[in-house]
Image (cartoon, rainbow, N blue to C red; front, side):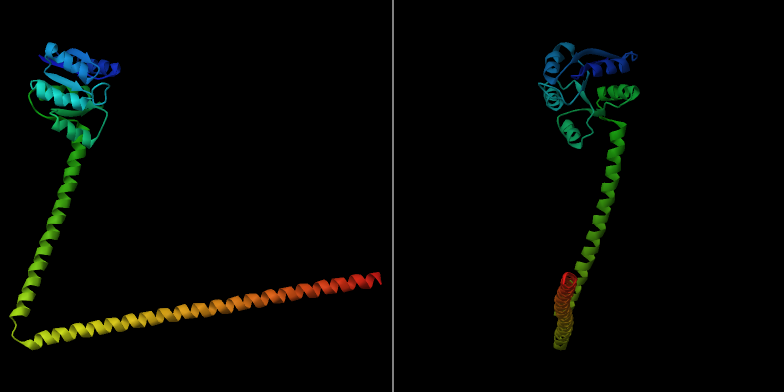
Length: 247
């Protein structure tokens, strides 16, 4: 008979787990606790084999309670039962001695199976979390392979460069070094010439834009003056007509 202690601050969770396990003749719920502190007080009397532990609870949370239980009561196997799909919580729970990490969406059959295996010392992980972390492992493995290939190529290039260096150093023909210098100098001159051409072309474009802008400003001013002149002529014509009517 596997004795189970349920530690959760929600009475609804107590009832749900009780419903899941009541038909299992080899599993017996020996007690309930609403937080880690109450669980620690009840463990000496109840002597549970498996403890279903929630994470977020008042007074003492599940992670801290798991660490203390693992130290003081090594015979009790703690199974975390939570709503939190959190990698940090999972990692901390493992460090604190938990024998499993289950989500509250775990089915009744999965919960029973987890209790049986945890009681035997086997670590248990929810099916959802297992799929998630297996996928992460596959992706990580792919990244590791890519990094290994890059390292291999870098190693090959480094070796090739060393061979070229050794070949140049061991060469007795001084013309080789001079020829290499001349080639490098020629390449630099060509690149500087191209850069100069690009700068000149860019400067020409800038000057052209300034010239066009100045012409545009002059044309705008001219049009503005022309419009003012037209308006003045029209006003004078109107005034003249008005005076002619009155006269």
